[in-house]
Image (cartoon, rainbow, N blue to C red; front, side, top):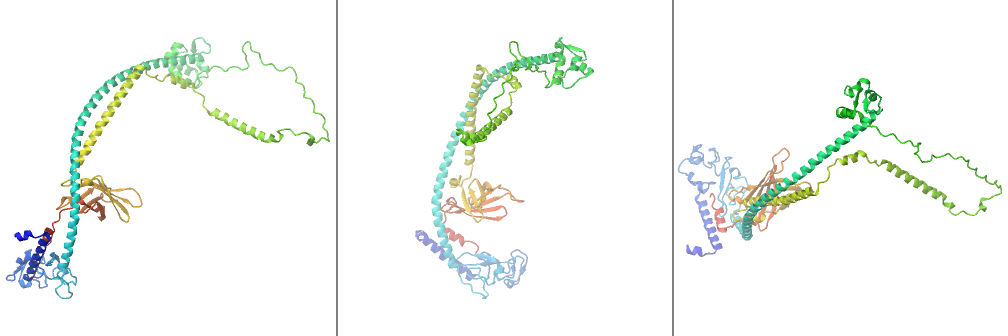
Length: 556
């Protein structure tokens, strides 16, 4: 045993290979029941009847492998193809044992590397078990070397992840302390803000109340003035009373009123003085006047004020212009001297026409400009005046308090969000040793003939057409779903719904690799995607000796 431990690893592996080969060879020699694994030989005793392994029947032992199916489970025909549900065991000495369906026995296709499934001689199957083992061993060595490289990177990933986790924990504690301080500041500023806002409100309310009272007086005065103007317009005889006849005669109301209607407007009386008119009748009359309020009569342009002279007609007849001289039939205008500028008369006429046209456009534009409405100036008078300086100072102080409070409240909310994000990150399962931490925040792409697929570990998975278009969600991070190795599979769920189908989801198979790479994407089922992702974080230590023993430690 001491000598065995003194051997190198390759020496140990060689001894194990030789031992297993001899062991399998002895088994193959000792076993006389074709297609039966070593672990089941005890059930096949030639000295007694054979009982089906499912207890469905017991038959004479010579019924075993007689090419007739007696047992429901097919265990009486392990070496023939008589039972459709039977299993044939390939010993495959020197390589991995294998169970195949009995239907493949003597089907002229070599399924077992030792050729034991084609024993009828129709075809000759060479024994390739040693060659397959060499290939397997070489592959395992390559995988072990890759795992060795990946493990070195994985160790670095773990150190990075653990370092980040500690930093996040420390930052979380600091943020929680800062948050308590920020909340205290917010509460103090809130109290200050409410205090100055109360002062501000009191000052603004007083200003607005005073203005409402002033405005009410202005409106009342205007209403009385309007009533007086209307009363005077109706009181045509200026006796200080409006009579029913004056209402009948006026054209200032919305229509012509008859005698009974006029009395009704006057509250059932024949006449009314101004005070009665204003207090009891004006609200009704106001609606009847509409836009027909009396206007001052237009000035008579023919009437002149005292001291002005009327325009007088000209008494003298203007003299007739002198007659032109008689025409000279022999006169030739070519004999006249040229008049400067005469040849430009046509151009000047055109310029004058253009100027006149421009003037006309200007006049039309000026006509379209609305004249100021006197009612607008009245409304301006009813607008609340600006606050006095003392009130403005109180408003400014309240504004400053609000800004200060809002800034502190925003800082407090930001700290709460940062704490929430940190806690969510710290609660993520990033591997036993935080080895998957460096993948967080990164995205990896894979492109096939139609789509660009994207995987963002611990966040989301998506696809997008190569020629552009919107991105389709294949799901968001869910959980680890590996079987023997929990960290060998990821699940992303809750993606965009398929047409008349389920929500999209993605399963990510993690493989050991020397670099992070999304190497394959498929859709084995509708709306269910499978991604293969290589990363050093998924590498495991491979024991070549243990792996070899495992390969040969199955059912023999």
